[in-house]
Length: 394
Ligand SMILES: Cc1cc2nc3c(=O)[nH]c(=O)nc-3n(C[C@H](O)[C@H](O)[C@H](O)COP(=O)(O)OP(=O)(O)OC[C@H]3O[C@@H](n4cnc5c(N)ncnc54)[C@H](O)[C@@H]3O)c2cc1C
Image: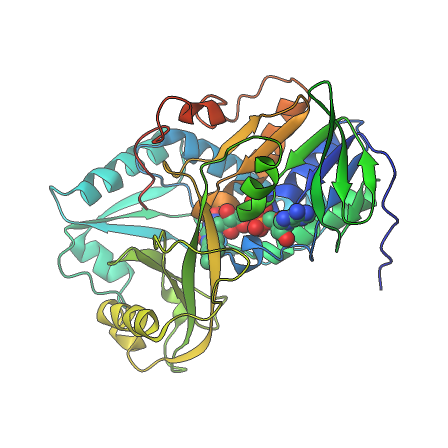
């Protein structure tokens, strides 16, 4: 059994939040700088959205090349996670396929993603409807003219990754404290000088707030307004008959904004994506409602008839922390020395390593080739509440 260290009275940098984002930031700060790092988590590691994540890693983001670049960098990191971080994680490679009808918005999205993946030499295939049927015989997409397969997409496990990052940073000299709530910040001359917890104050000159859907609440205390909403997403795990080879199924989108992926050879995960149902992250109902559950099941069965009689092995709900434009917020804001990393909606898992590296670059004033800082700045909302405008739809 590991023993929790004492909360230090001082440190160089406090990371608030032990989800995949906070632990990744903590890991990169610990391994790439000489800073003394303390991570404070109010509950357990991965207790927030991270523990509910479907943890899909894909590169196809339509024409949004910046996301392809970040996802690719992160995926390469995930592939070497065990050797580099020193912790095993669950990991399965499985293609992610987009089906589309010619002449539609979906077709534009599918084609532009195909072209970007090709340019970046990320394995991708365009299949006509016959080829798609041959490749994925269990799937029925009667209206689709073609499919684009992001061949080396994968999925993993949010808890494995966050816990792995947390253990690795602690092994390399950082302090990781769970069960401690950050309640506010000590500020002097418009600079962070400490973080107040429910227990004590930790003196520091930098604080990085990666508290997922709870980030706005903390930042509001110091006059920083973050345009974030919490959306409830519903997830079911189907338990198919033994004869169904679920590992033959790709990850794919379904009508209604749903998606599915195989579940480590033991079922099929089906979930909502950007449901639009705003909730309080402390009090939302963790059980899917009957109507959505039925609809998810029916929608899958209409595209994978072999799943019609699948039972339900489990179900739960989680929360997306979403900005109006669905782009992340990663920025220094508020008093000097204060940074936020939030608003990852349904895309934080696959990009967490790139975000950890980027925040480390931001804190150390290093040039970052990885992420476009303007695109993720809070100031994009200064003149328009739409920020960057278009939302990531898929
Ligand atoms: C159902 C679902 C499916 C998803 N599927 C995918 C996917 O397939 N691929 C993908 O890339 N992304 C996916 N995501 C999104 C991804 O999981 C999130 O973007 C990511 O986990 C966000 O991590 P985070 O660290 O920012 O937040 P969180 O995991 O929510 O972590 C925030 C942490 O801060 C702690 N905290 C809050 N307030 C305080 C405080 N005052 N003091 C101390 N600690 C505090 C919380 O307890 C929590 O542990 C999914 C999300 C959900 C909900």
